[in-house]
Image: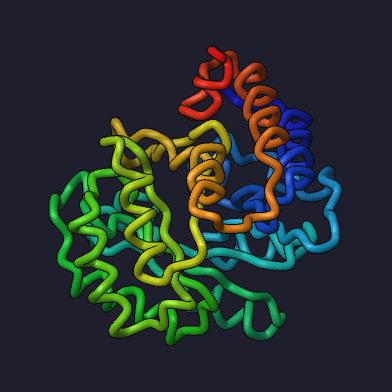
Amino acid sequence: NIVPTPVKINLINMLAETGLQVIEATSFVSPKWVPQMADHAEVMQGITQLPGVSYPVLTPNLKGFQAAVAAGAKEVSIFGAASELFTKKNINCSIDDEVMAAARAANVPVRGYVSCVLGCPYEGKISSAKVAEVSKKMYSMGCYEISLGDTIGIGTPGSMKEMLTAVMKEVPVGALAVHCHDTYGQALANILIALQMGVSVVDASVAGLGGCPYAQGASGNVATEDLVYMLHGLGIHTGVDLQKLMDTGTFICNALNRRTNSKVSQASCRL
């Protein structure tokens, strides 16, 4: 089902009020490929952009980049994959040189996503050397940060450590982020390993929503509520109000008529 535009706008505004500093607002992909994102310009124009909060958007190609900038985007993300087959099947998500050149000319920061870093639905295991190669390419092209995505959530702390060790030889750890789906229940364990290795940016999704339309069976990204709970338990200051975050998760789950995937929210409902 297509989520109504006002619901998306409310969700983004509520997330910004929790203290989160970065909220990926929408994706400027073709509506033909992802109909859910057809209202990207309306979303960007409808949200209240708070000072100190950035609202990057995904732009797979030059046309998407131009539309994003016209809609007021001040930061964009591009994506590639460590798997060539996944690249071909996922709206041909090869790294777009044109977007990088246009972003440089417009002085727009670019974040790079690398998908399938710990496994691919089509190719199976992915070599850490391949992940390091793609990450190095994105970083050398000018991406200020590389987000390493376990798209199908198949990774373990062991494979996460091996992959990060390889990538950190090519890209400074300060420019790395991790993006862990929770399909096999390993996301928090994998994130803890990344934190211990020096990574300080983690992607998450409120209520654990999401998945991947090109990776059947993949569950959503780690729930933001669960990640914040763990970080606070480690004594890491996030500036995020966990109760407000849980309330935001409740709002979007009610709007979608679905149950939260956040263990913290589920437990809090039972207390």
